[in-house]
Length: 339
Image 1 (cartoon, rainbow, N blue to C red):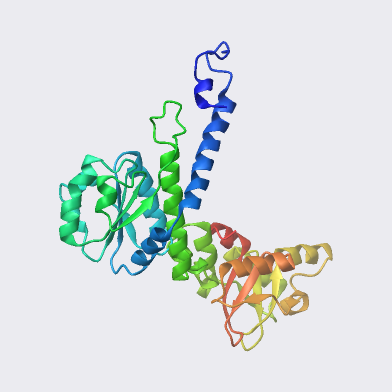
Image 2 (image 1 turned 90 degrees about the horizontal axis):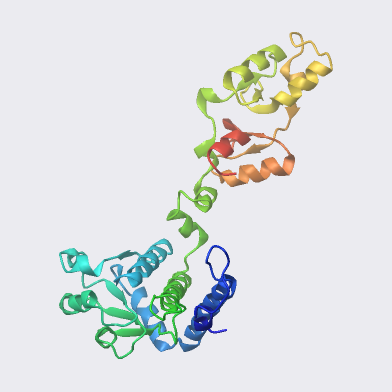
């Protein structure tokens, strides 16, 4: 179904005046854009490989520029490059002519995006870019345009039609440019050997960053915040320590200060149900021996996995010699947004 048929004014309208063909039109728009992206994939050639090689050899940064809708696409491409191992930023071509060209050096690579390749603001900065010596990659739908001919490498992003029924609003062309930018960023990521850990370093505030960068030592309670009682202390003493520290548990230490057990809120409830004398019974008699532990240099996400594996909500943190250095519970991990 051609888009023009859907907007000819002959379709039935409801009481709201809206065409009865919104789904058909939307599907046609998506079909056009998908078709143009697939066609773009088939047209990729050695110029794409050359662009990748040029950027990999770049000692500076990738500067992405574009006007209007192409500028919005360029902003996103620059952000994707920067977050996947290729230092990059977006430069508005209008601002470039008023001082921002000073941000570019001969060690940088410039990617200029324009479907027509004849945008005045972009053409105005071509001579100074040439004088600076920064190599230019053009991403355009017009291989014979001024921009494309001025570039060291031309990336063809042309589309046979826009998805706009008027054939005016940049739709399929901007989608094609965005997809081409993604292809460039992902290929560079792969060529650099960029890892999940590298990605996390540039996304410390995201869930992946927290899962890959946050260690147990970053979230555990330490020092006087660790609830501890001696094995010879009474249950009453353990209860008071648990209340003071608010972790719902206490580590039980032997005479040498090593953690030999753990006592939790659940253990306390069971002790009451069994009628145990909280004054005369020692912690050593009711504690769980061989408590589950974790080391401070392990990832916080490993603590979550261990808690889930053993259906527990608390862990003691010990060093390689078995000395107690911290404690944490599920609430600490929730607060750190690891869970």
